[in-house]
Image (cartoon, rainbow, N blue to C red):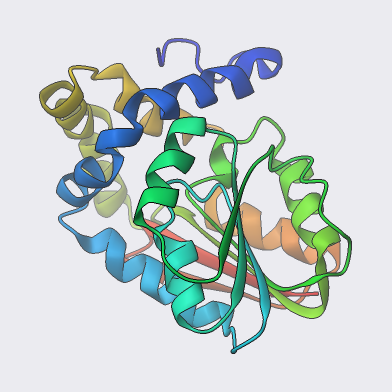
Length: 233
């Protein structure tokens, strides 16, 4: 499934959707194992940086199984969570209690009102969109002035030794989890492939600044292997 995965933007969305529909029921378990449960810590940091308060309208894009949406709702936010994978949303709805509205929509064309949300979050989703800049523009459109855009994704470590081991882990070890847990190594080989052209933390921060965000920050996690970019509209 990962072969040529990002070569054709016209079919990229359909391929990503098919991929996540396939792995939805095992997605959380595989994430726990391949990250050694660290992804929970990184997502908690994302929620902290969103700085939501009770009653805030908050959007979580590419929400997957809903873990971030649930955490935002736990802070008292009124959460809209969006994903285009039907199977992911089934898992999210089954696990959710609280103020979360789940919608099946494309993150590039949400159909949501402009200048509405106090915070917009996206974790491990921007990298998968067919249009990186288009995804950021849509996030910027729907957030209200003063709102916070918070983006968590794989990074590109600046240290050469860390980068060597990190890329080796993604290329050779992560697909093993896919093979063992869902008999589909290519489903997780795509992570390494998707990073080849992804601008990571530096490019994301620069793009937020170009959009007009102020106080743009990059929070590197695990020596830059993961990163959260934050900007204020």
